[in-house]
Image (cartoon, rainbow over all chains, first blue to last red; front, side):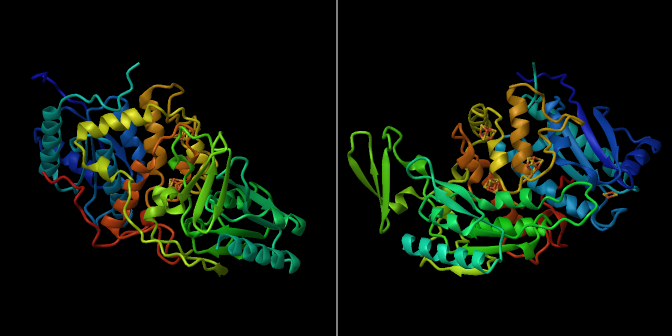
Length: 141
Length: 327
Ligand code: SF4
Ligand code: SF4
Ligand code: SF4
Ligand code: FES
């Protein structure tokens, strides 16, 4: 039974130099995007431990968005390129285990792409709404 | 063939000791049960006779090396590292390559006695209603004796482990001496979650849950894996505490996802974790997915080329970007 009023909780891990600034730009430009997203700022997408993502799901977050600078633009030169390999493997692995691909999404957003950030958030929120609240992986005592 | 290899191993080890080239040799000795062998540590030439070679020398011996070489913390004086001789099948040698690349092994202090592997047997492939009281191996045939003293003859090939059936690297990629075995196994894709992968997402999740619910979190899979040399495993950390101290399935899953994902680009498909599991969980259904993906997405195989950068420490401009969601 799908709850029409289901408002997902999305955690977004954003890198400090591009994506977080992109989110900031979306804010100061007064671009509307869903309030379902809770942003966590990290120095670089390369700083993301894949276990953060799995832990978020375990704690009942309905979806995770990870975003960093576009390839070639990373403040630390290659943090996002190295991280990209981890992300690609993690996503496939979680899907292999049976976790919906919509739950964990990755994107590249630059500091000037406020509108793009808003679009990504909308997309993730809509897709997660579609598949409903997280059941798998959650630790309910 | 097996006996000849065994004799040759003993000769080499004898030489190593008489020429004072090593302090310790790691090989296999007779196991405590039929159709098993145990890892064995030889420190003096009198003990060389204990060494064996047969179809059940499965353990990945590389697991001991990081523990031996792990530098003592905060010791100022230069410590003399031991010189180790080690028997290495294809997979053991690949693990050694991974460990050298990850700076866990002093290459100069290791003498690698490589063997072109003919594939190792899996005791679990024998019908489990037979109580094996004895076994003998001769000319590619294995004769087991059951509780009624009845002899059952099996072909060696019938008992090969899944990972051995699929193995593409029977020849150790690194070695100081190589013993040939006339291996002519055709490597064939087998198991490793290929059928699992074809199921629907819900079925996969249910099967994953079912399989993992058997896990008692004994961490034997971690202890058996040569890649799991971390001084403080994430599973034991308390700051942050990644895994709750409950038997909740979610915590068990978190351990499994964490441990298996830590092998991404490092797993050599040696099967040590699968063999170690007391609950008979086929962990390969999950570990091998990462092995396949490393190959398919990044054309990378762990432990094959010493000079190649580590999968997760390097990148190529042509790395696929399919995991990215576009708005
Ligand atoms: S994960 Fe299992 S198969 Fe892979 S290297 Fe470790 S013990 Fe071997
Ligand atoms: S599971 Fe991960 S953290 Fe634990 S020992 Fe293995 S590689 Fe290290
Ligand atoms: S060896 Fe088996 S039971 Fe023990 S922790 Fe690993 S999967 Fe679980
Ligand atoms: S700083 Fe943005 S991805 Fe590295």
